Amino acid sequence: MRICYLCSDLGIPLSGIKGASAHVRGFVRAVRSLGHDIVVVTSLENQHVGLDTPVFSIPQPELFEKFPIEGYPRILRALRHTCNNVMTEKTLLKIINNFQPELIYERYSPFAFAGSVVAKKMEIFHTLEVNSLLATEGKLYRKQALQEVSELFEQAAFKATSLIVTVSENLRELITKTGVLEKRVITVPNGVDESFFIPYDSSIRERFADKIVIGFVGSLKPWHGINILVDSFCEIAEHPVYHLLVVGDGPMRKHFNELEQKFPEQVTYTGGIGHEDIHKYIDAMDICVAPYPKLENFYFSPLKVYEYMARGKAVIASDIGQISKLIKHGETGWLVPAGDTSSLVKAIQALSSNQSLREKLGEKASEEVLNNHTWKHRVEYFLNAIKKERPKVKNCSAKEIMT
Image 1 (cartoon, rainbow, N blue to C red):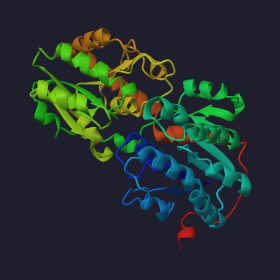
Image 2 (cartoon, rainbow, N blue to C red):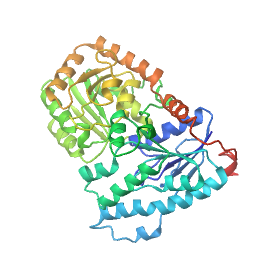
Image 3 (tube, rainbow, N blue to C red):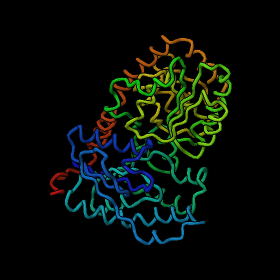
């Protein structure tokens, strides 16, 4: 099958260190490993991403290089995403004329609708992967400019696509409540790249001899439970055996800078780390946490939880949303009530004192992810789900369009 993978998001470089970039790379590699032809179209210049497939960049207008950014960053960002639809359409049409894909697989991006427009024009099956309701998040968390335009474009994108792929059942339900027919929405959660299952690396762990390392990996944003993690560690920090290792970056980084100053011998904050090295830091952790707060609409598919489990770690996570189905309490991880600091503290203390239980949970977790939750599993499920719906076209391969 020939697939054109589109990610026009100006904030997701293929070579990026955040989970979204890792998601794109994992999905594309899985498609390739299953023997399909795929080309990638992205808004950012990307070098050395190791995808072994053609990557095309969507050119950006020179207009925005001269735009007075000082004082108008949110407006500029919204305008760039909006205008990006024009350049995305032009780029896609050039590639499609040569490659003739049977499917355009698009990662939903802010203000984006060009993928579905081109697909309809060229009569190509189009799927829209939705990881979050970007217009809603923009309003709640980012003080987004052109909010009404964002909402209008989001509705248009949802209506125009052939099929919506959500990363969780909760998100699927929210989208169908907007009027999208249930039969036009399927769920394909996040997964783990098989390359993540490599031998244990002790290089980082050596820094924390005789410590119980509590670890967190991910973007430092409010809905990831940063305040809960900070409060929980403050409660156990009187015991010097505990060490907090935080890997990631985001708007709440100051909390860990302050925590490092308060407990200089017990807190390590690394900032953002390249995804190719993330496994080394997870390997240094004894207990990995995903302390999500109690959110009314928890529609995420936490990549970090899959990666914790893949590395054979004891995971303590909030009993909420998709996590509740992924982790079997006491078997492949430990679930605590969402937003409950006291329960998180008790769980950390219980697992800290029971190494055999930590090892048992980690072993079972790794087996579960390897057997059921790799990106290859996800891609196979998705392609089987659309097999009867997509059109069949024969034309040149991805390698041929590069010659």
